Image (cartoon, rainbow, N blue to C red):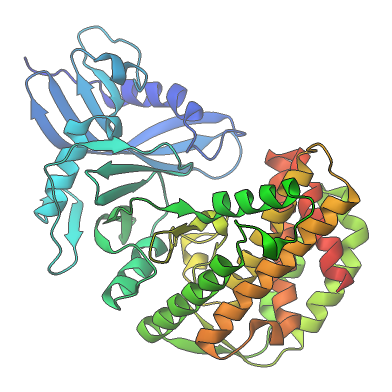
Length: 458
């Protein structure tokens, strides 16, 4: 039976209603004016089934347009599992459209194209030399991610589709490729990627990398350690069976190795003075204070720290992770792995590809330790007393020190020796966190605000 596909307008109308309900759609607070289909690439056609790679531009009543990609499947009859992913209402004499990443037939077609290095219209399927992909195993969608969609094939391959597209090479592919070619032991190996020219520039659509089984994320491990500390009232952090400091030290060493491999592969440059970078921090602080009244009293002390950092001389800069925290690391039975090298989500691809000081990654992890240590207190858990605050600070200090010790053991340079710049990066991250919490989780706002108070107190 020939599949009668919806035309561009019917597809766009269905997507206009469907997109705001997807967790990876980043503009839920903006009213959609229109959805325009700008690319439809046929991927497959069979009895009662077809597939396309669809790229759309979403126009809003206010603010800039955004681009999204949706591999779309079409079937004359949708099975029960696919009904929940339908994009369009039933149209007379038209096949039903649905999010194809939840269909093993469509994801299998993408993986086969990647394994064979195909060219399908403007889509280019690329692999690293010598890489072998198993295209026989069916794919299953992971539920953990927010901004992208990942599909796992078998037990060894993860395929990640970047839902919101920006023109340019995604740093996640660029940095994973550099680290994989360098033989870095602290990242999952890159296996391939999909790209196309958009606005005349090569642009990353998706990537395939090694899937790591039996791995625990750092955030979950840290929270278990903190909960145990609060439960065992008579024990110090060092006496816990779930003491995290050994892992924190190994994590610091893993980051140092990643930084060293990136420096060797992509180079190191020198930034003469910190005035431009600090000016950006000042601007973010001023913008945040306009929307968060509690920041107003902290503005001058934070600016004083920024002023100290601005006096730092020439600084080595290189490619870094850019958005490092405990949720971006995995503990395997053998080592720590860093994941998701996309960089800070609110920055453009061009900004995320700029060299920066490795201290930004160090500061990001130190802020994450602080979040983990104070997370339960911020949730108003029973017994959130001054004693628990003391124990939270004990946990944070112990693991932050261990992390820096591990980093220093590899590099021979202690990040704490550059305290003015490190503290500026921590404060910049805390201001970013305050803006995020004020918008999305107001009950968590005290967590970064209290951290800013501690950091300016020195």
